[in-house]
Length: 300
Image (cartoon, rainbow, N blue to C red; front, top):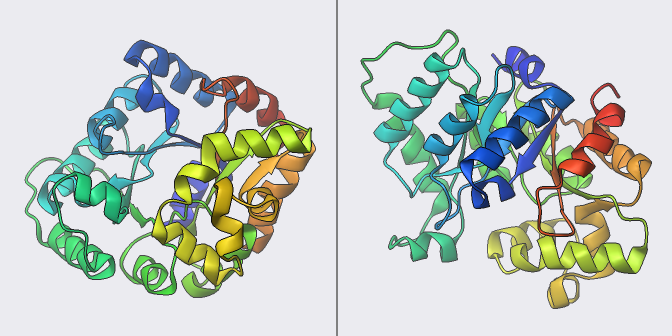
């Protein structure tokens, strides 16, 4: 399944959180253009006040013809396992297998905001997968059945992704993390990291925009800082929205070739697929950046 999945989604896709903040008509057009540009998958986030993951994916599956729609991620605290199982089967069968289920345990502040008690995320994910496997489903099933991947950062979650799903979708990571993840996953499972990108060559401007639009928010979440500590970053790197060293490691900024090199570093480290996230300087959708990058990245 993993080889087929990797071939289906290609070497480069798009991770986009901003689509959930715009009207449906606008994001339909954006998804259709991302597909026309040749990206192999479109990954959609799910926040506590954002569009619900499965209905959001269905909206954009209906607006496209070939691209895979992936949840990056569907929060396991947002719905029970039987509901997630039924939704994944429904979308995969209705849209010719173009749906990929990315699952994640999210973060304590986000989960607590939903009224749940965030505790033991690894055990919660393992139990969720058990419940999905045991859930009855009587509707038609796609062939192949919808694949699952996990938002895995640490070794235990990566091992769970290896043993129980089609692979891993790490977020807010570096090529060094990709290499470590591939070592844990082995040669078979899919490895599809997210990579933030910004077409801005002035260092001061690029780093300021990266902090404003990306790193400052995510450095407030302990799961990410804990993972970065394993990669050699420390408290001094987390202050003020991120040190220059951290920002440069997390966000690929510069010209098109600089972004190409970073994506290639992930591939060289073992990634099958890299989901680029355009950081739009005007809080827009960054489609202009995706247009500029597509000819260089898609056939690299």
